[in-house]
Structures are given as C-alpha cells and as structure tokens.
Length: 438
Image (cartoon, rainbow, N blue to C red; front, side, top):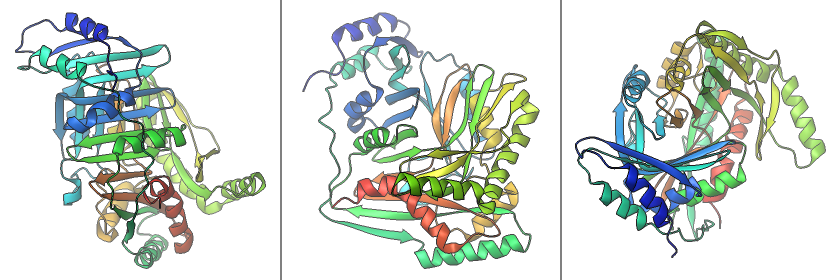
C-alpha cells in the first residue's frame, strides 16, 4: 500500500521537534491530507483515535500526546483549566458523557465522564488548507513517533457494511418505552416537571464486526450538514452524525443551534412540504422548542453584551428527519472558552428536560438505559478557547460485533406514546441502516 505521509513532511516536523526529552515537544507543518485518512490509517494500531467534522472544518488524530480526564459537577471546568494552562500548538479533542458521574455499564468501559486529548499526530483541515501536528509527550523519543508516521500506509478501500446475519434488540422493549412515555406525560400534567427527554437503545449484534471509521466516513458523506464524529477508546468506538451544535466559539463570537420538535421527511416534495408545515404549526412541537430556546437564552444572556435570538424557529431538513431549529448568536462580554460555555449549557432541555434539576432526577428514576456519552458532547478546542462542541446524537457505541445505538424524544403534556416511538425510529435510521444491511 502507498505511504500515507511523504518523507518531506516528516523531515519538516523533525526540524521542529528538537528539545529536551523531559518536556513535551510540538511541531506542525502544512500537508495535503484528509484528517479522516489519517485516522483510518492509524486507528487500528492506536489505543486512542478521534475525529470530528463540521460543515466548515474537520479534525482527526491518533495516539495520545497529552490526556486528562475528570468527573463530577466541575468536570468540564477542570478540563478547561488544564487545557488553558498549556500552550498546545495542536487541536484538543474533547468529549463527555450525559451524566456528570459518567457511564455505569461495562459496555462503556474506557469512556471517562469527561476527557480531553491532544493527539500524538493530528490534522486540522479548513478553508485554506490542512495542517499536520505532532505532540511528543515528555520521556518519549521524537524519532519513535516519526518512524510510526513514516510507516503509515493508505487505508484499504472503505467497506460498505454487509453483514450476513444480525440481531436487533430494543432496550427497553417498545411497549415498555411507550408505558414510560405515558407515565412521563402523567407526571408533566400533574405539574412535577414541564418536559422530559426519554431515551431508548437498540443493540445490533452481527457476525462481522464493523470498521468503525469506515462507518464514520459513510456518515460524513451521507450527512454532510451534520457534525460527524468518532472517538476510540481501546477496542470500542463511539460514532455518530449529530445535527445539533451545542456551542461554538470563534474569538468573542459564539453560536448555539438547538433543535427540538421533529417530523419525518416526505416520500416526495409535496408530502415533505406538508409535513414541514404541520411541524411548524404544531403547538406541541413549538412548546417543546420554546423550552429549549428560553433556557439557552437565560444561560447565555448574563455572559454576553449582545445576544440574538430569532423570534421563530426555521425548518432544518436532514435525510431522515426535519427539525425546528433556532440559531442563537452572541458576543461575549468577557473571555470564556468553548468548554466553559458547554459547562454552562449542558444538558439543555433538548436532551434532558425542564426544569433542569427536576427533569434529571426524574430521568434517573424512570430511564432503563445507561446513556453513557449519548446526549453528552463531542468536539474540539484550542488553548485560546475557540472550538466547536456538538451534542452527541444519532450515534452508537461499537464494541466488537455489537453496536449499541441511542435515540430519544422530548415529552410534553400532549405527547402521544406511539408518535414519540416513531420519532425515535426515525432517529435510529442513520446508524441502523448502515449496521443492519442484509
């Protein structure tokens, strides 16, 4: 197979990696290479690999140059402090679970409540070109890392997943989940909470293990307007194509783009337009959306001297589903990093409920699954505080020949259990269609 990285690129990096072995050494140089090509080439021989793409940028890396994990209610602030205490000339990949306590079940082994990683080797691609960076940790010889890079070869052609056999199992069963929705509706009507987002899981067991970053590549191509991601811990990879941006920061400018309220896509343009009109006219979906927007407004207004919140949502259409969407933009009154902003916002009512504390206590009581990193966050940042973090949706955890997929639906007073079950089925489709081929 052809070499992935040209020797001239290795030589340029080597010149910048001179320095004492007792400290981290960093170097970067331009390169004409897709970040996902690096990850596909090196993930199988690395204990860690990560990839994240947005419509204007993608970041990918293999190996660990620096890593920190944190747990508890201050986990994101702890990560932020550690990141900003360094001056990394490389991207920092960030991911965290839905719950501050982190995942509970063995299927999530290796995934911390929150983690930040500076890859050993990374590539950032955006308008204007790509750049490769190397972060050699203290105590490691730079030449060892460069030899690994020189030995990387172009990955074999992407494999379309075709399992000869598969078994799909719901957790909890559809009937049990409908009952949970009905129970939540009763709690909402009784005034205990205003909204709860109930999640369910589907496991897919196959006779052929998926190639996780081939799946990421397929998701990136199939859902170009989404935030595609893959995060590998040992032999497990968390992958997805999320439609929802939690928060992005560039300088003092910030953006959040909550989605709440969903409908299917139509079989043709006429039906699609009708379904979109019905979604925009739906009192139930509008109310579900307003809860999210108003919560984000209340959390961001004290941090900004200018916050723009459109009066009405617009429709955002994805291949399997359309959503009500509000893009919120603002100018920070004082410097706050994207990780700090994620700490302020997470979990929004789009993935938890409202009021926040009451709805989270309710979910702890009623939900039968361990969300793990589902409905948490995945993204990147730099030491200046810029970055993008997506809500981890339309996703699955791949572990050997089993994939655990996750989806949820916002429940309000007039939710219908059958309709909410159908909504989760729409949200499972991006991953389920790829994994359950026959």
